[in-house]
Length: 104
Image 1 (spheres, helix red, strand yellow):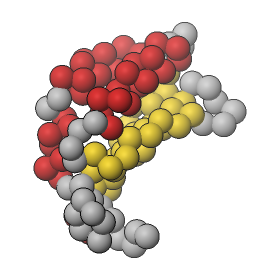
Image 2: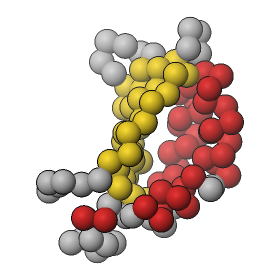
Image 3: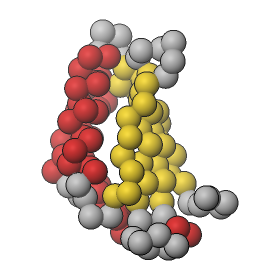
């Protein structure tokens, strides 16, 4: 148990974003702009941005939410809507929506 809810209800999102040619800086700026507002959401437990070693064009978003309702709320925010409207122009994107199995 955490202070914000039961870990068995947590939802993790791992998104891999690969910048289109010449768009790495624009992609990073877009992702950087998501950090503070996403971290401030009431149901967000983690929102971290990583870059692949040896590939400056590939980023990974590591997100953790208290539950599916928090994910749904995130997807309705203005910052996520803006991101969704812009991401296809700057990157190829794949995302995994994950449920915990054995999480410490």
